[in-house]
Amino acid sequence: MYHVGIFLFNDVELLDFAGPLEVFSVTSELNEFKLYRVFTISQDGKAIKTINGLKVLPDYGFTDHPDIDLLVIPGGDGTKKEMLKEEVLSWLSKCHQASAVTMTVCSGARLAGRLGLLNGLPCTTHHEVMEHLGQLAPETVICRDKRYVDNGKIMTAGGISAGIDLSLHVVEKQYGSNISDKTRIYMEYGDWIPLYERSDK
Image (cartoon, rainbow, N blue to C red; front, side):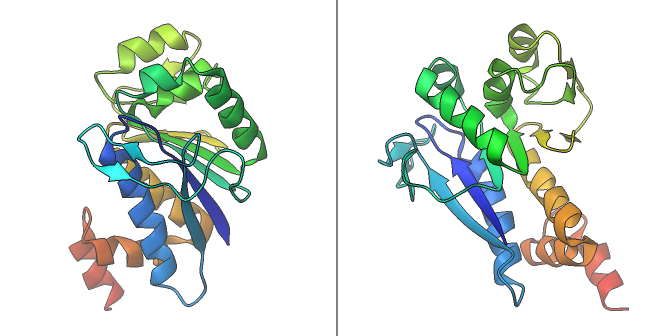
């Protein structure tokens, strides 16, 4: 079972974290064995407010969360402030070093870029953030036409809904296409009807 830790902060983009949370949670629910344990983390463990005003109470703070196998760094306007916080950067760096996979969604790539995790690697982000990311991480190669980019340990998704695509890719990579197809069909996401028809044959 993989432990999925999702970083939350004020002015986070809602679907950036809710999409991956749904994918990994549903994947666990649909299968006999719990494939993922999903939890959320904020710096102090207290409630955060998303960019659209929804209040969310995280499960843990930086000092009391379980080990993280898969770190999810979502985006949103709040990343501009988070990337200037040394405690946040230190925690993210520590979690990345210990994780099997770190994935960013949308402008969450700003944080990975600030940490130097994208140096020399292809990546993607929200189309409106690409110029800023290029300034933050000039050694990275920004792929403007990719929904997501998989570099192994570090993966990046484009804007907002692309986090769902990357999460499904991670599920397929870790557990195979039958498991990821089951999740996609249940969520009715993307080309799920051809998958449904194929799975009935």
